[in-house]
Image (tube, rainbow, N blue to C red; front, side, top):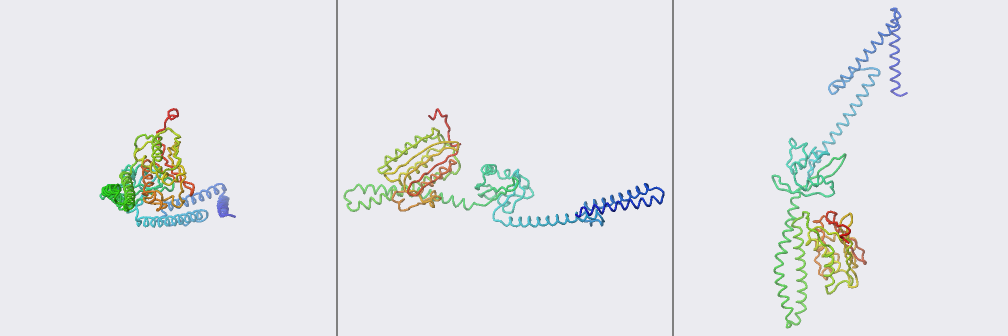
Length: 437
């Protein structure tokens, strides 16, 4: 029999015993029912007293001892005591875990801010207080976007895309750059991670300034050297010196192209924000790029253009021209004379797409993730022969980034490569079918 069944039998026996005793006393007194009623009233009064004692203890159990009850009430008290001890054990355990969590997050080199579903601050560690100039007394419960009023941060916080952090310039008492990243957990709870990237941002800016200044300063002396070399190369009396001078001219032209690419990349990096721009005639641009390739002394046998949409691309024309030109130029350089280059433009619900496919040597798969790095070359010797600077795809990547796009690279060794620029729908000026036809 279960404990509940045992307690029920025990209570039943006690009630029946009390009623029997009351009936016996009433029988001796000459009124059985009066004796039964009296016994029942006394039993009820005893239970009410036990209930009162239990209620008092439940209200003051932190300071009062449990009542010394017997029978069913004793079982109830014992159950409550066990539940209370279990609850206190788990509460103390959770308190210890929370304190350990707070101590560990307080020791983290990065800032941590806990946000509720409304974006209000629930808790933050010391590093977050230092980076955002927060006060526990004044800022707990306030919305984080009311304290960090940077537009980039507000868009990131409410955008829902948290895979990459956002770097924000904060005008706190000490100017600093902070990288924010949101981590979602639980029921719409969010953890905001903060990291001071001021040193990295300043080093990157120094690198950009150095590259831009060095490229600008090198261009003038290179122009002078190229001018003298051109003059020397036209002098028929140099004899055996003609070959070295021709090689010097070729290397000078290559260095000039590298500097021009560096200056162009520096101009693109001068402003990392998105741009709006104006509608661009992609069909006309592709036709001009095809014409430029065919005008070269050495070019692929076949250069085709397929314009599958009359929709225009919205953006900075010079930047888009530079990106598309680099892709076509690379395809033309690495495609043999008997090969072909295919340029395509089309649009769909996912946006606009511009691709350049060639039948060149292809690219090994392990090199593809690094192709857009500055000065990265799959075959350095071949790149020097073709006059490549190693900056073309870096320029393409940055131009696409400024337009909210991305570069997709597909290649099969020995069969060729396809470079596709994907632009979001808001970068496409969709035109009616009749107009595009």
